[in-house]
Length: 582
Image 1: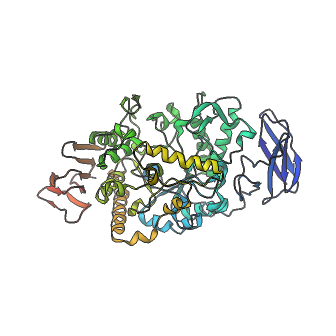
Image 2: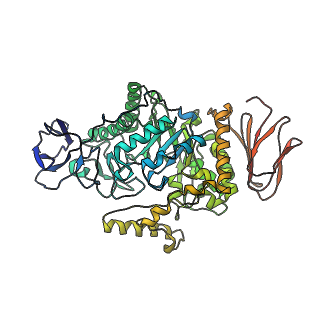
Image 3: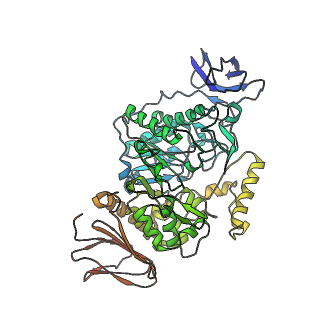
């Protein structure tokens, strides 16, 4: 027997169709739910819903299995059938984490969870503690970034489906790696979304870049909030995922007494206590509002960490010799990077020229471990016109400098797939919409977007072309190339140093000092006994160090420490251990 339940508060009649047979459902109750028990329905059976007099067969908004795509019938899935063996696994503390973001479809040639499992040993050897998967919820078409998910409780079938995700998590845990999952709760994709037929999941009067905002405060919003909270709990409870990264929480419009993020944080805390596992929530937010990561007990929203875009923008602008427009105009000096390293947000109540207003507020005494730092991620690579990576933009030597600053900074570092060996393959924006009209709009919109920045339309990859997707796959064969092997060894050394040095795991505010010269373009980041000295200027120059200091390693061969100073050539970095206690 299987109990079918669906939320459809404004519907007069609901029928569930199971293996071709119709069963009228009972409801709605006071909360808008319809129910029926079907005696001979079992896992593996296909079903769909018929609403009122419409004969269109609609998949379940909470479907846990869409084996034939988001427009076809749902299939009953047994969450308890999988055999887990990770009962003793505990995720490492996020404060000690080194996160690796990857996209299942392009991480390997196969584009599947099974293929990704085969590369876990590479991540172990690199020193990765947490793998962060880009969204895996079902979306229209075969391939895409995943941010257009529409069946949020279902795992994208081309990746392998729900059991394959569980096998990946199980394998990662066996290797000692925690798994984080990117989820999108601020909008649904434009194709294959049936939620609007069932109830007011969206508030159309509240616009966002993707259409109406998710209904978090209007009529029936309690059950919409329940939908997203239940989804979050499912990933962590049933798929043993160790945490979630919440996409673009600044797009939430919620003036409720208890904000959706606060509600979610409280429920995840309860689940964590129930299953006796460390669970975390990481937000993406451009609000520069420390309340996002402040504890609920002091009036915050209770997220464990958030991405720090200001740090990325400041670092990228310093490294990029060619001036960048848009929001990068707010980060036009070395001083901005130094402020980010010391104070987290560059805009913390100061005036933003790009926004034409005062933006942000200071983070105060929050641990720097509540912020994730990076030079590459899916957005900052894939949302460039041709998806070029950092070494393509700023050069190999400055790519090494970026790695040293990221991995030795006070923030939790995040790498993007292939970054560790300066992968040559771009990561471009790609999609696979079945609707020809929508596909054309996406392709034309991408060209228009970058034409405004002076790009020729012929140079912009077509998102709907299979070639764009295939071009974005990592080329694992290049890992052994001399330059790739050099970069990979550089990343391994930096990660090992971070993991083995106490002062590099200190997130206390005020414990990172930065000195710099805007004119000579050098920067010195001091974290206890470890000093990271970067020369971004055109001239070779000396940097004094204390007596008894030693050179741990440098980005270029031949650099040495003599007579209490180290000479750095153009675009080089040295990591020094001073004689002071660590």
